[in-house]
Length: 497
Image (cartoon, rainbow, N blue to C red):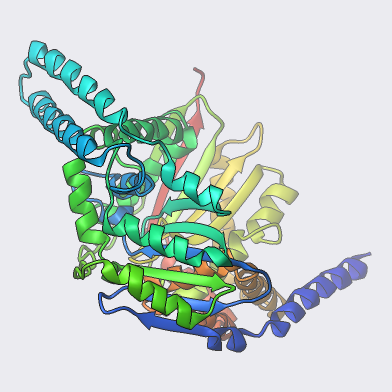
């Protein structure tokens, strides 16, 4: 029976490895056309004529890590505002709307200033609040809600979305290939002439999102505490959605300043993958995106998190289910040690074949789910490798922690076998390939690799980096980084409500 199961595992591994070998990375890489406009905007174009569709991903080299002090969550907020339209999209009368917005802004700034005083005048706050709310409603009456998205859907567009990460922001769209020029016109327009309409209404939406994701969610609250504990000076420790007081404080003025700084064309990268002719794409990009005036790309964050001098630990008393989360400080995604660290974390907690899953979920049944990965919350700067576990009924986070730490020590003391190393490499390569199977996934990977590593070609070099990892490398980085001194622990201890 044991030999039969071993044979099945070997067959499965061979199947994964075979699919990796069959995938031609070099041909795909050579099919990419790269072009940079005079204003600095970069295009990455890949022809795929399997179907008459195109996937577009616009990447802005700005994420929540770049939020200004006092205005946390602004990167995420601007992502919402990018769908609000322009001076020609989303309004019934732009002149009246801009005049109304000006009144709305002035009243909010007066209200904000009064609220921010050491001793606010409550009567004045009440008076200004009433006038401000009336001005909001007046400007909203001039808005055509969601016109930007409605046009996209009407013209056959699909999968329109956006995501704000710690390191960057992505905007996604799929279109029929005969709507290329329409996309060029609309996408360039929203970064050339955005109107930040419904700003304060959308701010309320973000505040509610924070309540749901963080304040009413034990896991979200715990993660926020973990990041704050992990990073003493680096902005990775600040919640991406922002603090509630900051969300309620910032104005259209700050949002516009953020846009001007981070959404210049030299800070944008666009991947276009699908049924297109690169020459036509470049010509249209010159016509539409070339209109955006050059602005210099902002500098990288210079703040460096100091070396941790001892384990940090937080216990959260909560009536929810117990949860264990620990992390270790590790280098950024470009560091030579990262491929080995990624492999070590995969072996430790990457899926159902990992050490932690086999021993804590299948074996002792002390946990219902476990996982481990590097790059939390981002990869552009020195970051964290995270290990988490959801204890099963009748078990505590402290019990699970004991077993997790045992497995980490095994990783340091017992070298991986050739079969185990081959399994890690096969899974990693298969993961890369899965992300390239459709146009949207490929476009996203081209953009994110360029934003993180300065070159989209890193996507294809990653397989060589995986192949180069040895069992000795994995053991070395485990000993170097997965230490008690370098550890941050946060856990939920269940208490009666």
